[in-house]
Image (cartoon, rainbow, N blue to C red; front, side):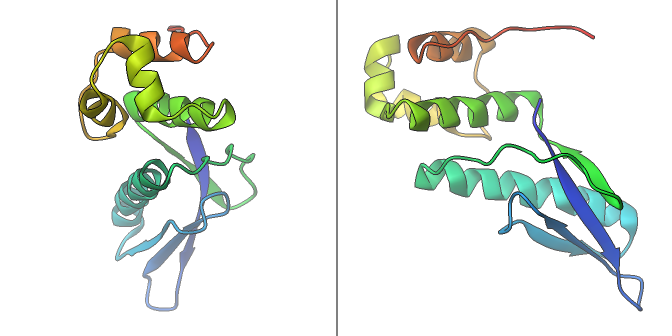
Length: 139
């Protein structure tokens, strides 16, 4: 699962500003720390949407520094972001991957949509087509 370090900084009014070193476009705020944490996940997901839309590689998460908290992407979204990075690294276009796994290009669009439920077997097939293996571990 991908998790990114986020910095939560309260101002003099008690509003928490949130930023991610690894994902500079992901910035938000919340009136309370709890609200800021929820907003942090929302803005991180929104940033991932833009990376996918622009076919840009998502940076690897850095280790957390003092004063930072981890914000975890849901497992299905993490898998799709990792698939995006593999596609970019191997210069595989979505249409090429769609052909390789035997789906229509519009289905590939749904597979890469973070908000669309995709079967884990479909993601495993896509990873296999890019030369990787999707594994599931219970800890």
